[in-house]
Image 1 (cartoon, one colour):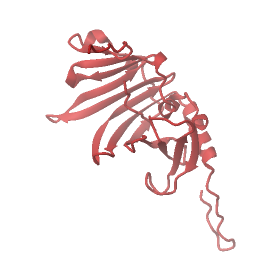
Image 2 (cartoon, rainbow, N blue to C red):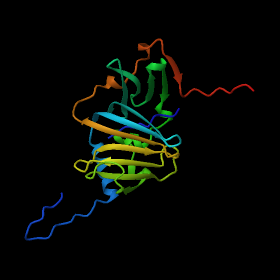
Image 3 (cartoon, helix red, strand yellow):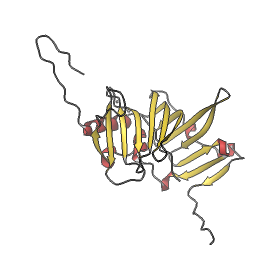
Length: 239
């Protein structure tokens, strides 16, 4: 099963010149130091809620698909992504990714089905897991500061992370970092086919405690849904 990367995430003085002195110029921070500060920020939070916008660019066809919703993350390893769409001027759940840290549910109301996956057999990629305090960006990626102004605003720090081991999941991961506290404002994953999965996180709330029940999915609540076991052996087709 190919998991939506999410992802989802979300992360980050100038001296005043006087007439008596020349302006003081501060050197740009080293990429390794920014990675350390990003990792430190997420290691020190317990949970976060944010809204998100996602744009997926298909490189082959040159098309873009936009989505939006709300994401909840909580240690250890809990996450929920609710994708919302407007129907008849009402917010309707289009799909949801719900994980209590051990099991992931991909819920698709429009298709009357959900996909169930045991995460013990499929560890979440570091590009996602660092957001809730797991994984080590420095061990997994080579880091550089990106000054191309492709992503983020002029006051943001932009990290370009390249996996140390080749990965089909991503060729590069960009993190747009708020330099005031080093949280991720945007996360951009570019895969081996140059498809781009771009998340922008807004209105992060680090203080409101999230109930653990938000990360549970009761299969009995949708008796008419088909359950697909992503861990089941693939049956061989007859010739």
